[in-house]
Structure formats: structure tokens, C-alpha cells
Figure 1 (cartoon, rainbow, N blue to C red):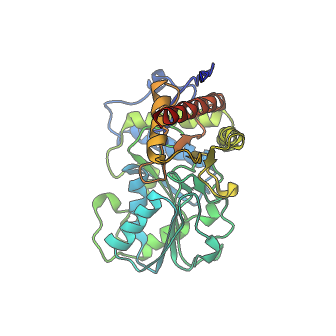
Figure 2 (cartoon, rainbow, N blue to C red):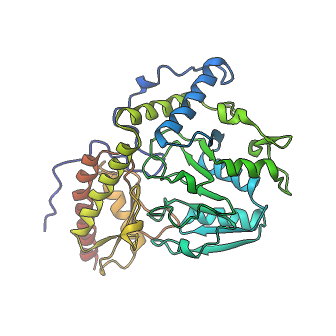
Length: 384
């Protein structure tokens, strides 16, 4: 049987879950204003960094009394700064339902050796927040980048909590509504929802987080790139663009381009809608085919950015090999790049549907997934 090749191809085949697709209007010409060769401590460098912080606050709706800092080492660096600088003052609760959350558990329990209650859920599920003691410091990812599940809202987080909430929001920021009053530490990286370049992280601190930094000194030594206080007081410069280490002014310019694009299309509501529409296009395809499912068990917790899918056809005996072959066919055709599931996740596909992706491209991709699946099933039948 001849398997018909789809007539339409995605205009942009970049569906990687970080680094992600650039903004639709992207051109290297947009980076012409980058102050290359200039110090980030010069007036022009400081102004660019301050603008990045101010635009981040404006688009995300971050409260005025929250600090926003640009920090080293992407989202990982931002999370580690928070863990090493703030944990240990009280018991911790570690929540994990995918590989990155599991990594934070390892750092806290095995490296920092902090007394912690560890709660986990399988891939495709989420920890029951109703069982969490928020009088402890609680560490969690908002969106499971490798599992395709997210926290639907912050309703279970009490306003009168005694502990801090430390939230890795790297694949949620700019595509999901984050309740700032429920989050004390929030981190993300530039290379996710706005498709920025890697290596820089964002660290957002509530007044409660600042109070912790100024009132608590960890028992362990802190590397220079983790230090946010001096003499018991917050180093305010970090949150005004005076970065701890040397940032790439080219990457800063790239982030500014993305932020200005986001502002031009309507800000956060428009960004959320774009991601929602993209995820809906995948969900529509999944609902129409009985051989594929969303990895998320509950639709209410299904991610709208890192959409993870699994093959359910009983004829597939080696799920990992089958998913890898499908992803390879899509790549060979140039219609979808880097859509294989994360290495620690169950076999399947992971399609980035964040705000820089066009819905037309997602919809164009869906028939190609059907085509690749059928081609691989045919190959299995022939081999048998």
C-alpha cells in the first residue's frame, strides 16, 4: 500500500524544546543594535541589561516589589542559586514528576544533605499539591518539560504559608499564567518560550525570599556566582543589571528583540493564546487517532508548551526504537527537527508548542506524524 506524502510542510521545522524556535519575524539584522565589543559595565551595557529586566517585569506582570535578576548558567544556574542560598533554614519538600525536578531532588538531598520530604509522580502525572506542607520550603517545576504535564494553577498554595516556594518555571514563563503572589522564587531561561539564546538565567524574588536571604546564612560555603548578599544585605545591583559574571551582549540583544516582539503582539495574553492554540492543534490530532496519546494522564495538567506524546499501537513491541525511527523520518524529510522524547522520559515524541511557534506549522506537522507512523508500521509488518 502506498502511503501518501502530505502536501504541506511546516514553514519552520524547529520544534525543539530548547533551544526553541526563534520569533516568527526573526532576522539577524534585528541584532544590529547590540553593543558588541563594549563592556557590560559601560553605560550602554547597563542600559541594555536594565531594559531586559524592565521589559520582563512589564510583560510578565511581575509585582513592583519583586526583584528580577539576570544570572549565570541558564535556568539551572538560577535554580541552583536559590537552592544553595536559601534552603536549610527549615525543612524542605521536594516535588518531582519529571527528570529536571528529579535533578533538584538529587542536589538538595544528596549534595546539600537537607532534611527533605520527597514526593514524586510518574511521567504523565503530577504530585497532589493538597498533600504538601507549605510550612516547609517547597521546590517544584511549574511545567514538566520532559513529561508534558504542568501545574494547572496555584490554588493549592496558601497565601499564609510559612515556607518559601521555589519554582522552576523555565518552560512556563511567557506561555502560562504564573500567580506571583504564590511564588517566592521563580526561575526561567531565555532559550525556552521566547526562543532566546542560551546561557543566561532569570531569577525573580519575592519580598519573602529577600527576607530569607538577609536573615539566613547557609552552613556551607557559597561559590561567588551564587552569592546574592554582602554584609547581610541583598546586593541590589544584581537586580538592576549589574550581573555577577560577564553576560553576552549579543544574547541580551536577542532577548530584547524577543521581548519587544512579545510586547508588539499584545503581551502575555497573546503569548498564552499562541501556546494554547498550538497545543490545541496537537490535541485535536491525538483525539482523531487511536494509536497515539498525550503522555499527560489528566487533560487539566497537560502542558501547552512541551507536548509529550506516546504511541499506543499494540503492534509496536519496541517503543523506543519505533519512536526514534519516526522522529528520524520526520527529520530526514525536514519537517520536524529534534522531536524525540527526552532521554530520561518514556519513548515517544515531544513537540514544542511555545509562543514563538506558528499554529500553521503545528497543523502542517500533524499529517507528517501520521505519515511517519504509517511508514514505520508498514516497515514492521514487512520485517515480520
